Length: 73
Image (cartoon, rainbow, N blue to C red; front, side, top):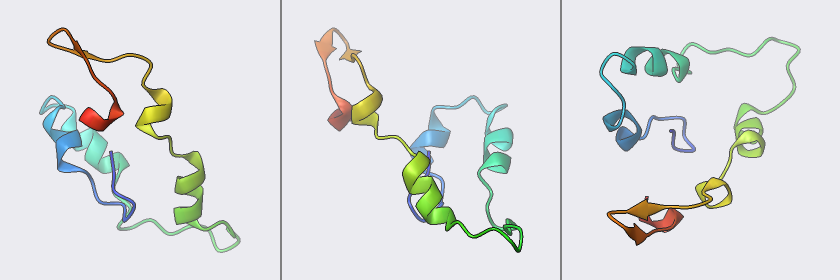
């Protein structure tokens, strides 16, 4: 959904219904996010640890009857 610099991937938005876009953008808006003063974890590091790679999650893919992989996305 996002690049490592926390900007939204435009293709992520293009597949959503228009009615869902504002809610997703609201959830992904980090501009006014400030961690608590006692928070010692690097947010970028945390996103790296919690994120998932598509190749690890994609079990099967078919497009117009042909097989595909994570590299097709």
